[in-house]
Image 1 (cartoon, helix red, strand yellow):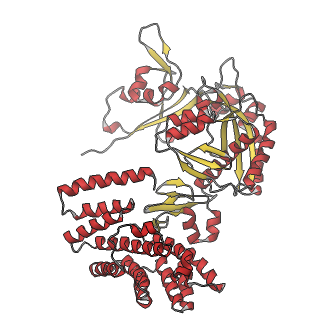
Image 2: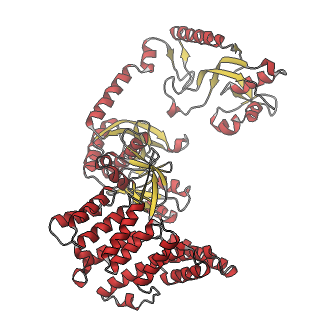
Image 3: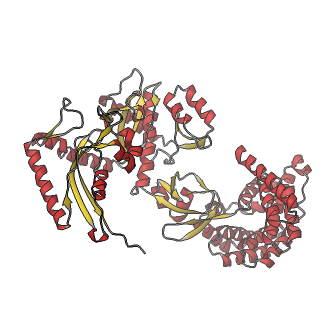
Length: 622
């Protein structure tokens, strides 16, 4: 538990204490405070609150249940401490009583809640400690009857059967526990089949080391919040231990599936397979075929690229390195060094070398102050700028090998799945897309889990180059660009204009079928029009600069969209619902500012023909 979590629980204790002073017989407040005491390991006060709770409400079975768990945990700890002659633990004052007291509490729980599966399971554990193994098996039987997928019940029943000499039944139960996701059961089976002693769980001083191991397992099973519910996409629900990871869930379904998954979704958020899940959740596993799986794969590949660059170019600074639709990129500032296309094969080779090491990616939460210090000491000015804008308490880093990056994830667990690497190009990019900031080097790349996939992708790229509209447009004299007119401003040549007119005529025939009337609007509009429509507030600073007329205070904009003008056409005259629907359309030229680095043929331009269709329909009202 982190220091912040501990402080949170102590604050909750203070809050509950104030409420209890005001209402001493409030059972729920005492029960809630006992949970906080338990979580900060103040067991004596936790038990005292539970004692008061059952005195106030004798049928409040959760208080009996939690009191039993805490007492049982303390008794087991004292037993281990005694074997190790732990004087400090022996001297610690406790109010736990004995195993019979724990059993009486669980008897009471079963009396009040006869279908509460965990009461039978934990009473079975207590009976095992009392060496009443046959009675323990009866309770484990009842727990399994109530929940046929209760892995821990099979596990403990299996151990008990083996201790009693019922080896065949014990192995069957342990196998079932393993199938249900409790993989430590397989280790027990392996030890047993290798003719090693299973009864070390019940050994005394001679087996104290292994008893410690058993106690650690038992401690996990005795958490106040024992299980969480995981809901799969098909609606099925399975229960797992709190803190289960996505990988463990995948392994409980199929070992083959566990090899193929790349990330997982928890309540709509994509996370690493290694992150613990601590609450009930809607859960989905993502493989390479899924967009989220590719995203995690390529995001990790961007970090792998950065790690390679760090080794090859000491002192290099890093900007951002996201996954994109096809692959990834990383913006870097290489200082005096220049990274060219001819350098990419060397970087690829270094990436392959690092990927082969199967480095684990380690996620770590870090305080804002520590993050600024960490990256500041490395001279990472770009990262420090990003950190300064983040909220403290929500900052994480990922480390692989010698490389640590500011990142929120998600990522692969290791670099092992990255088998095929291709760096595609080097380009310039302004830091954070702002033309007045430093121009960085952007390296694009793509990776795959198989070389065959990369070969197929590169073949598709080659075919796409042959069909590039910029290449075809130039060869067929369809359109042209010139800096004298302006970047991103296409001019249609005679052949291209003829093609464009034919397309417009085709669309006009379609419009006529649906009763659209064509209109024409001016290429500029008053600033107030876009303020009224809301476009100015959202897009104003990204549009072209306003046109100022000689008249004071009058400003116009090049038309970035047609719809505000069309709304004015609709507003031009009163209309009855009988006039509706009104359908109007326009082939209007619009202008939008795109940064020079974003311009791309006819797909990203600063002026284009925008076919706008507006339909106003009657809405029935009462």
